[in-house]
Every structure is written in structure tokens, then in C-alpha cells.
Length: 287
Length: 157
Image (cartoon, rainbow over the protein chains, first blue to last red):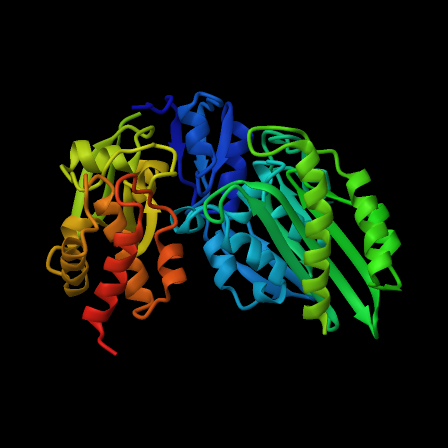
């Protein structure tokens, strides 16, 4: 029996009302799926005086394509993204969210919440990083858009101010001749945190990759890209020798730690393995 | 701050006074006497508290009671006469899929949602359907067999 701490509950019906509550209430925290927040509340790891429930803000629940961007509203759940024909254009993202948690979790948990929780192991992060996703952040007084990596301030730490809300995640709809892939290693297959996760995105031209982007989870303080490895790959054919060089660069760029889920050494090695597997699948999908 | 919430429980409108910092799980068990919904981990990990929220399986320990306002909540009690649930129940009994029984209501709710949406699941699809329900007795094999058996009873090929 783990009682919840006391708080007041607010269920705004519009974004304007939600932002106004976040701006005026003391120690207010937004809640969407609650799959991360509820356990934190029970562990007394956080004790807001007010919870602002976003579930009734209909205008935040969407997945749509707009002016060449795929846009995911703040309360879009993993299950909604997994089933969305629009999100299907980014298979790395769909693969990632399809394996987060369990059906019970995916029916409630949101992509925006997964990102704001800022776990280094957030599986939605590597695919969105390789798509160079942007995050729209709103408060009562300001709207700003930042690259996704700037949302991550450290392990379990985001860069939002207390009155700010992520309202949308968006990335360019992948062009023809591009492909993406996400793979992860866990201690078991289902309903588990990633020991290492990786995403790759490529745009191909003939037998060369015109553009290559790589991102990894659970191997640094935040989910990260590996720009040096990307530079090695860019404009080249994916030969065995080139992949060896890129894998060495990846292993030098990540900074894993040893914890209960795996050792730093294992994680570093697996980054090389997952880089090869995701690149191969992304290139295949780009065909 | 006491508040009154109204929602539909197993097809019947209910109205109940709750504190906002109460889970739907506690409200169902303690205020509405719905005892099929079990309290296990209270972290959304074990699946014993699974209910259908507007038809989708969710962990009721991760929902605040006021989040059920205006929604449809379905538990095992509401599916007692449902033909798919009857097939599932019988298949669970005949395949030895129940030992201590604590996980069974949550397992049945997940299996129900799976077969309702996908009447002919593969073995992997069944495994994925009960990903969020932990059983510490059976080793899952008999549960898997029971769900596949129920699928055949429901819609023989």
C-alpha cells in the first residue's frame, strides 16, 4: 500500500486554460498518461501541490502531417502513434513506441511524456533525434521551438521552466529514398528498459548514403547523436571497412556507465553492433 | 478537496465522492466493491489491476479516480455474460491456466481485449497481448494455450 501524496487536481478543457493553470498555481505539474509520474508520486520522489491533467485538452491529441512535417500532439499516446498511418512514414519511431512498456502502458503513456521524463533510456528519443525532431514549448507568455536534444538537460532532467508545456513534437516527413530503423537490447524482449537502444536514418543515392544520422539511448546522460560517426558515413558506400571505422567512432563518442542493467563495456560494444544492424535495416528500407 | 466523479461502470452510471489523490484502483475496490480488480505492484508493472477504459486495457493503479470522469470502465464483473469472456473463462479452467488466481482477472481482461480486436492471433500476438500481465505460478505456457484455445472456441476455422 503506497498512498499518493496530497495534491489538488485540475482538468482544463483547453490549452489556454491549462497554460493559465500552470502559470498561476503553486508547484503545478502536468499529467498525461501518468505512467512515469504516478510511480514517482507514490515513491515521494516528487510532490506537486497541483496536478494539471491534459487528457481533456482535445486540441493536444493529434498525429497529423502539416506543411511537410509530421506533427505529434502532446497527448498522443504510444498506441496512437504505433497505429497511425502518418507516423508509419517513420518506421524507426513506430518500432520504438510499439515496444515501450506493455499494452496497458502504451494505451496511456504519451510520446511527449516519454521525452519530458528525460530518461537516458527513453526509447522514443533515438528515432526522433535521427529525424532531427523539434519540440514546441508553450507557456502563457511565450511559444518557442527547440531541437529535441535541447529538451534533455541530464538524466531524468528536462530543460522546461515550471510553467512550460511541450505541446508538439514535429519532424520533416521523410523524403523518398530515405529509411530509418530502431533496435534495442534489453534484459528480456518485452516490457523492459533498454540496456542499449539505437536508431539510424539514411538518405541514399545510388549505392551511397547521402545523409546518415545515428542516435543512441542508455549510453550517456541523455539520449545522444554521434556526429563523428555520421560524418564518416556521409557521402560514402556502406562498405565493411567504412562500417568498422564508423563503429569505432560511435564507441568513442558514447559515454555509458555500469549499472544494474549492464556494464559500460558491454554497452559500448553493443553500440557498434546496433549501429551496423540499424544502418543495414535503414538502408534496406531506403531502397 | 473532496470531489464527486461520475462515470459508467460495467454499463451502469455511478457517482462517487473521492479525494483527488486516489487511484481508480482504490476507488473501484474500496468505494464500489469491485473486487476482481487486484492490487499488486501499484507501479503499472504487474497488470493485476487491468481494466478497460473506453474499451482499452489500462492499469487502474496508474489512473487517478477523477481521470475516469465521463469515461466507460469495464471490469470482469461487467463481462460475466459476455460470450467471448465465457469462452475465455472455460478455456482457462480446462487448460489449467489458473493456479493462485491473483493475476487471472487482469489476464482475462487483456486476453479479452486481444481476442476482441484480433480473433485469430498468432502465438507471438498472444504473448504481446499479455505482455503487461505477470503470472508467478503458471510459467505462462498454459495461459498462452488457454487463450489460443479460446480463440478456436470463439471462431472455429
